[in-house]
Amino acid sequence: MMAEKPEAEDGEKNGSRAANGASKNRIFARMKQGFYILGPKVMELGDVVCVLFSGKIPFCLRPWGRYYLLVGECYAWAHGQGGNGHAGAGSGC
Image 1 (cartoon, one colour):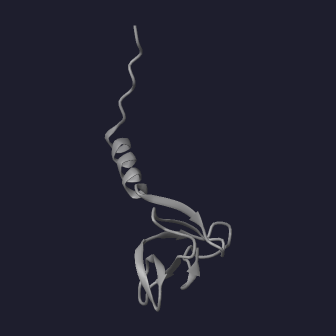
Image 2: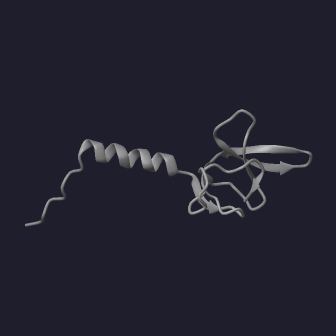
Image 3: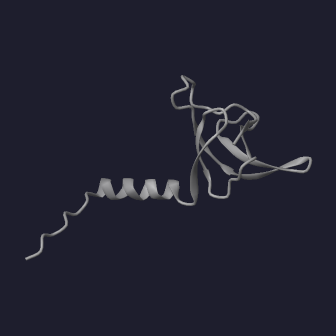
């Protein structure tokens, strides 16, 4: 007789689904300044993470000639830095 796998409660299923959705197609990286970021899977070395004017969410931008391409939204945290958890403007990866 095989033991049955206990079923997860609805809250556990929803939490797992939310975590999976938030991290799908994203990578974990560390910036030169010590910030840890969760950003778009297509981020590359040399991309810039910054908070755009009047914004609250950091974005990953890719230098492209005189301009920047918007790569995607990031989550940044200054773990162990005693900071406020936000990447400063112009922080490079």
